[in-house]
Structure formats: C-alpha cells, structure tokens
Length: 153
Ligand SMILES: [Zn+2]
Ligand SMILES: [Zn+2]
Image 1 (cartoon, rainbow, N blue to C red):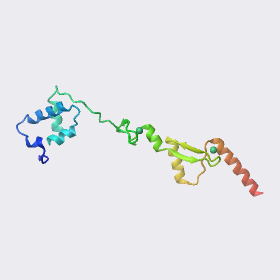
Image 2: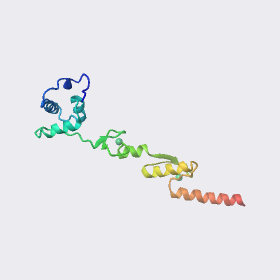
Image 3: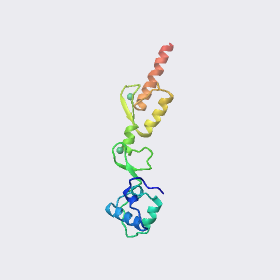
Image 4: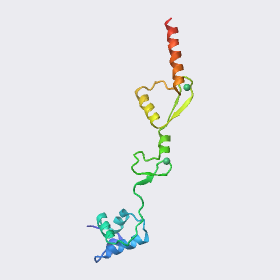
C-alpha cells in the first residue's frame, strides 16, 4: 500500500503496534474523529482501523451520528435517509404552490401533497381552472352553465 505523499504519520510508520499507538493518540486527542479522517491520517484501510480499534476495548470514541444530516433550508438536523434533504417545514415551503382562484381571483397557497397534485394537473393542462374551495368551483360552474345557456338562446 502506498501512503499519501507528505503524510507525516505514514512517513514515521515503523514497527507493528505503532499504528495502534497512533490510532489511540488520535482518538484520545479527538474522540469524535471519524474513521475516514483516520484513514486519511494513517494511510491504512478502514477495516484495518476498525480491527485496531476493536483490539482496544478501553478506548472511548464519541460517535457522531451518521444517520443525521443538516436540512438544506434551515440547517435543522434531519435523517440522512430523508430523500428531499430538507426538514418537513422547509420541504413544505419549497414545494408550495400559489395560484389565483378562477372564480374570485383570491390568491391561494397549497403545500405538500395538495401542491404536488395540482402541479401534476397543471402540467397536463396549464389553463386549468383553479379554485379556493368547492363553493368557488360551484359558483363558477353555475355561472358558466347559465352563460352558455344565454349564449345558446
Ligand atoms: Zn429545514
Ligand atoms: Zn375563490
């Protein structure tokens, strides 16, 4: 295995047990040090590091949870599994949809699955009528019906 050039730990690498000693001193000086940092500093593989650490049951490592990450919007801690990379409220905000009611002209904001549904419908039909609620929709349909009847006469 070839060490990273200029890596001071690698250059000093010597007798067996030396790596173990270095791992110990690194962890002791920074209990939150990640395995990837150790890999970088020592120039050895992650599994080798794990093996060394397993052989030092007295050593204390403070695990920084890998399952959490920061929300892209507000830097709140969220689960790394979260496919949106955002907390609920940021996701809702970023995925809200604003529209004006076809009937009364009032501006409405919908969020979450409602916004998702509307966006899908608008993609199919961009001129689609949108309403605040059923009552606006009913008024519109009613007026449209009577206008058509008037036109027909
Ligand atoms: Zn957020
Ligand atoms: Zn309305």
